[in-house]
Length: 424
Figure 1 (cartoon, rainbow, N blue to C red):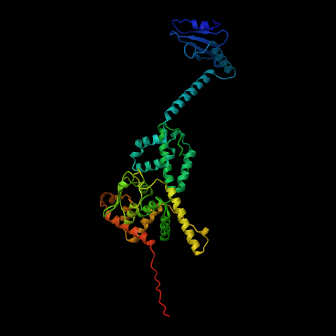
Figure 2 (cartoon, rainbow, N blue to C red; figure 1 turned 180 degrees about the vertical axis):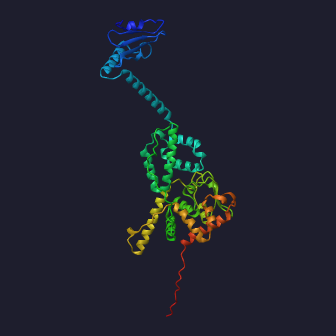
Figure 3 (tube, one colour; figure 1 turned 45 degrees about the vertical axis):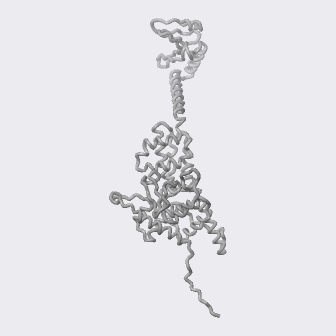
């Protein structure tokens, strides 16, 4: 029989040997449920159109978080209204529970991901995947350098627009690097998704850059112009650009050069590029021609720093070189009586200097195998297995020939016109 429930009745309801329910006479469908353990709860019962009887638990009737009698009646009344409108209270309750579970899971995931910044996750990615790859060092180099502006951001907060903006900025200075960054970045964030550190991959759907091999080689006249421009640069860009040109090594390798890697005295001055900084993961010895030694020994050292050169980007170094070269060609235009505003410098990149050196050395009598050794390229096939000769003497001769060639470009060439003495 239904009972007019009151707060005292609910509080004093005693336990029995088995579970029992008490219907509320004032609110149809509302039940007080009492368990043999003494636990009490509120339930709403109704009948579906197919005749099945359904019970929906509304909440506790006693203990922490319990619903009062009035709150239970209000909840039951809401369920009756939903039923009258064609809804199903049980289905709604299940949906609410799923939503609450999803909310709790999202909050827990948010808490777990709080410290999952790009800087903290990248080492885990390297150890779990990239370090096992043959290209692992290159993956590390590219991601550490190009994602440094994201270092303090959580991996789950990086959006597709961030990836697009980054790839566009890299593409403007190095299209090939942009393509590799896209590949490395996409795999990194895919790994993050597999570890439930991120929900989406910001590099998915970004445009790929077609990798076109470059063949730009500076002409002798362009090298003369470059050498003129280098003399006008300020410290340490002047010394850096000169050493970069003289050694024919990569920008990052020269930029990160340390004094401990250099031997500038004796008959065979050298720069030993450690395996940790070499692109192919192998130590590389670069003989230093006298002009490079002169540049390096004449440099002021940066206080409390092991590095030879102050930190600056390739983009900044190249921008400054372009400015000074343009100033020089405009001066030449004025001297010829031409319009200086029409003067221009044919676009080139810093890496083109390396290709220019490699292309010029054979003109100077250097064999291609030695050129490859100078550049630090890895030998392939049978040669990689059997060729263990260091080529130190050949490399030194090649770089000295290259340095001499550059020096001769700016040396005043004697005129082949013979002046005749006119007797009066």
